[in-house]
Each structure stands twice: as structure tokens, then as C-alpha cells.
Image (cartoon, rainbow, N blue to C red; front, side, top):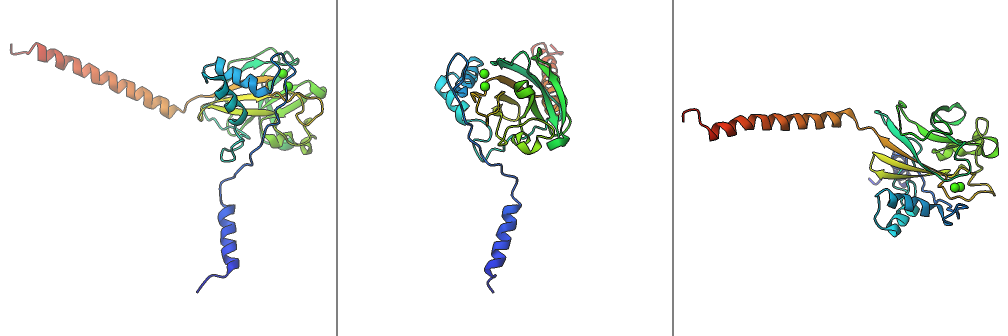
Length: 251
Ligand SMILES: [Ca+2]
Ligand SMILES: [Ca+2]
């Protein structure tokens, strides 16, 4: 007996509902930077990538900077947060902003009005600094724009609906563009410190560049150590055998 169409639809619905969370892709609204170098922000990202050895060719770097951020590809999850059990090394590697000597930086946990914020760098500090936030976390910047604005890596945290806790942009739009420089290991966060949904912004996303490097799991470090010890022992046991071969005891 054939299943009624409605049952097929119900089954299909549940199959789709049980898929892992798929995050919608987003297109960054790159603007023309007000800073010397005059161009869209991805040009500054591309220069940084070339200068730091990630790309040899500037056009390849520009292509990655413009289209290679996390979230452009819908198959790649939107980076609302990280979970790095062994902590991470965080460093501000470039700041091109009138606010660069005022802006602070940190990580947050939770969401909405119940977020907790932990400052990593005051206005003068750049790192590198090791952080150990247990569980899921994201990053924020606190710029003096508009009397003090917190921007979050989680796009949803920038929504107007959460203005009870922090000043926000009007669309829940990205105030940072995140690149995976090394899979599950290193990221570049490129920040825009002006409201990207406002009328007075250059949307260049180069006001602050931050690198995040995950500290490896102890398992892999332990395995590496074990491997090195094994190699050492293997070589140690080989030496006497080689010596015995050359100088036999019964000679
Ligand atoms: Ca800017
Ligand atoms: Ca800037």
C-alpha cells in the first residue's frame, strides 16, 4: 500500500528539521576606506595576508579577502562563537582607526542581555595574550563611537533588540569579518568600528585586525612527544647493535 502524500511530507519535514544548524550566508557590504590606501577594506586584508606570508599573489589574496570569509559560503557555519578547550593566543596585529588608542577588546559568553564580558586588552595593549574561556565564547570590541559601542563577532548580538544591554546596529549586521587562516587552528578577525548600518561609516573592516590561534589539544601534543621518545629509543637501541656488528665480541 502506498503511503499518503501527507505522511511523505511529514517525514520530509522531520528529516529537514533534524539537519545540523545551517547558517545563512551573508554578503559583506564593503565600503571605500577613508584611510590612506583608498580602497575597499578587503584590499587592506589582502595586503596583510601577503605581508604575512599567507599569499604570494596579491590578486589571489584579494579574492580570498573578498569572498573567502566565513559565512560567504553557506556550507561554512557562521562563526557566532568559538569553543577552544585549551585556550587561545590572541593578538591585535593591526589597527587603522582614529579610535585605535581608545578601543578595548575582549571575549564574551552567553547571549542577549545576559552576556558576560571579559576584557583582554585595554586601549594600550595588543598582546599576544593567552586566554582560557571555558565553553562557547565570542569576541567583542568596545569603541567610543556614539558614546560607547560594543560590537560582537556573533551577528545576532548586534541586533537592535538587544539594545537594553549595549548599543547596537539596526540590522544585526556583521561588524567583523572572520577568516580561517589555518583550519580549526588560526583565524583573522577584521573589525569595522563604526555602525555598518549607519550613514556615517566607511565599512572598510580594517579598523582592527585580531588573530586567534588555538592551543593544540594535549592529546596531539602528547602523541607528538610519545613519537619523539619512541624515535629516540629506537635510535638508542640501534647504536649498540651497529657497534656490535662492527666490533663482534668473539673477534
Ligand atoms: Ca572603518
Ligand atoms: Ca579604518
